Amino acid sequence: MLTHRKIWGALDALARHHGLSPSGLARKAGLDPTTFNKSKRATPSGRLRWPNTESLSKALEATGASLDEFLAILNQIDGAGARRPSRLLPLIGFAQAGNGGYFDDGGFPVGGGWDEVSFPDVNDENAYALEVAGDSMLPVFRDGDTIIVSPGSNVRRGDRIVVRTLEGEVLVKVLYRQTAHTIEIMSFNPEYENRLLQTSEIDWIARIVWASQ
Image 1 (cartoon, rainbow, N blue to C red):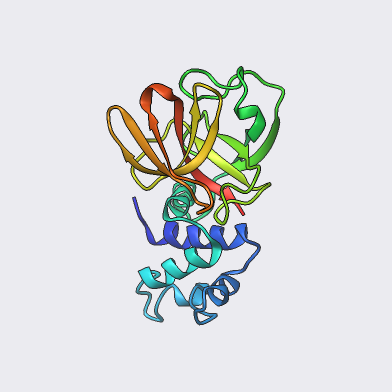
Image 2: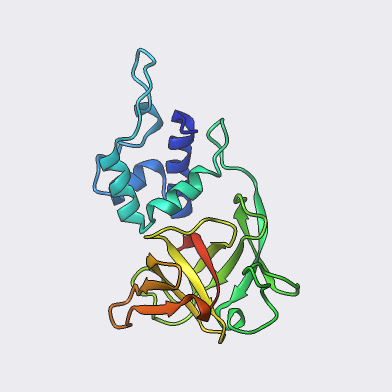
């Protein structure tokens, strides 16, 4: 459920994630520095003020966060407007993700011995972190960025996803179209081609719910 406290709490968390104060986030977004200040969240008479869609859109654009990523933060905000405690997620390297033994048939991480990262709890006990390698995901994801992957989340058109083929190829793309027999995925980097894969070629697909950038 969307509440006043949760929306503002998510904006505050977005700012902190990028090392900004609410006023710093507003300036970065090209807005009046007081736009996101706590003093602006209610009128003198006590009527609640909500961030408008334009200011929210500019904040997402300024930080490079997608709407899905903002909604993921929103889901981590409790009723008091605070972010829920973090938990440790497995951190898997991009090269490791292509090797056998790290995932089961559903794309859930298995085994142990990997590094871990602390991340606010997500609604998927099988979520894990994947460290980006290479330039094929530019300009959205850079070499060394960490993305949080939720294999238990539903995947829809327009979602940023991780796809692993049966041959061990790991792709980070955008889901453009999915049918019973094929999926079409779009590259972030225009220097890399879009791909059309048969479902028979795919080991698993998982949705990206957050990225550290």
